[in-house]
Image (cartoon, rainbow, N blue to C red; front, top):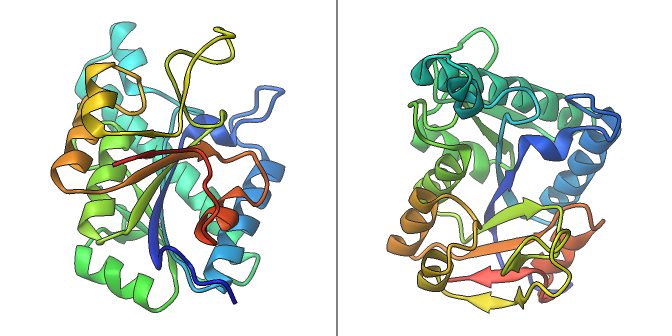
Length: 237
């Protein structure tokens, strides 16, 4: 069997990745497909941590721009990530894969509190761990939460799932001649403002030597091929 390049990863999914083309906030078929890919990773021995955004339901910053208090808006956004986490948990469990949702906010009736040592223990036992509610603090995005959790659990790689091949100089769906970057440093991503993640998330990864792979999550089997050593997407390190 081909040796895996990583034993423990942190996968960051945007909330928008769960949306249906018809506009529904959560598409059951998309969640099932993502759950199947995560189950296949676990079956091969990869320990998977997962952070899901909440943008398909609500974005706190957008609500703040409409007049809602920013702290309240961000707290609502954190709860949206919990909804997505529970949906992903259900889909993965239906495939027979043990999962734990750990929330940065205390919601004991629906999920566990986030405790780093307990999260690592779950991973070591082969359970998928879904980190919900961001960092538990307003003004921090789920990108920052993903970077933080990846570092805390000693992940070997953080994967930022997108709808395009990887990192480009501009939106490839709008700019035909946008340059694709297969390799770049965190300094280059920051200096060129490539919008890979927010600045806080990038700086966290840079200062803690956390490599990041940006890739198209909608390319079926891509994450597994990456784990088998195929060069997919853009590598930032």
